[in-house]
Structures are given as C-alpha cells and as structure tokens.
Amino acid sequence: MVQRIVKIPKHGGPDGVGLPRTAFDQLLIMLDDATIKDAEIKQAIELCLSASTQSEWLDYREELLQRIEK
Image 1 (cartoon, rainbow, N blue to C red):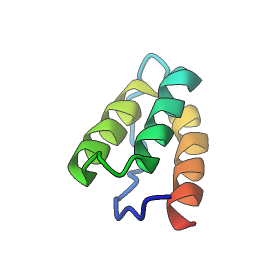
Image 2 (image 1 turned 90 degrees about the vertical axis):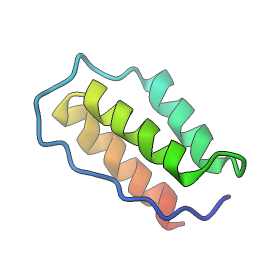
Image 3 (image 1 turned 180 degrees about the vertical axis):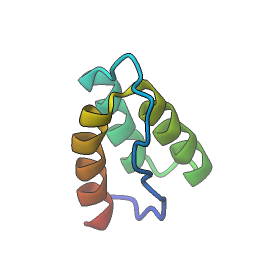
Image 4 (image 1 turned 180 degrees about the horizontal axis):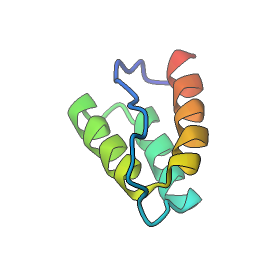
C-alpha cells in the first residue's frame, strides 16, 4: 500500500448524476498505484465527488478515509 496524504472533501451539493461503483473502484486502484502522483489522485477524487450524489459520497468518503488511514 502506498502512503498518501490527500484531503477527502465532504459533498456540499449539488448532487451529480451518480457514481458507478466500478468508477469508485478505479479510484481505489489509483490510490494503491505508486506511479500515480498525489495531484492526479486529488483530481480523480474531485471528479468522483462531482459525479456522485451526496448519499453515495458519504459512503465512498468513509471508505476512502479508512483506506488512507491504514
């Protein structure tokens, strides 16, 4: 696992169209890839945030925080 220092924002609205789980899983794969820079991770997180609904992001954010804290 790669040690990352990234901020996981809260969703303040408006809701996006919804983020498929497969897209979120790709973000998780990126987190573990040492060749991907933190700036790219930040951009991917922001993209996922804007696509997700607030309730989706609540769950996804919790999973990201748990993954990063390990």
